Image 1 (cartoon, rainbow, N blue to C red):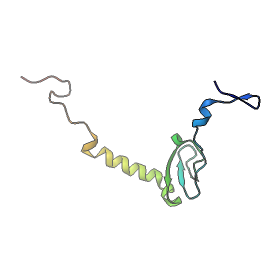
Image 2: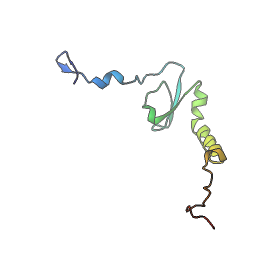
Image 3: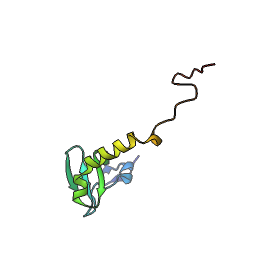
Image 4: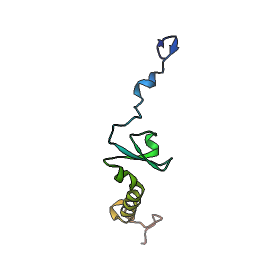
Length: 92
């Protein structure tokens, strides 16, 4: 597995872990804590961003709602009905 480092075994996957600290000026909206954070303090699965400004991050949930509505009403996001109807049977 991993090499011994200082008497401890290192985890080979530790090489692939991403830093959780963001750059100054990057803003995120944390879904778990429901607040804006500068730099990603929480895992990517729990946040939206990065945003260029704090104000953009503050509006992350509203932006997501608006985009979801647009996508739900966009016919390009829905499959076209099949030629045989919903159950695949054809009227002959």
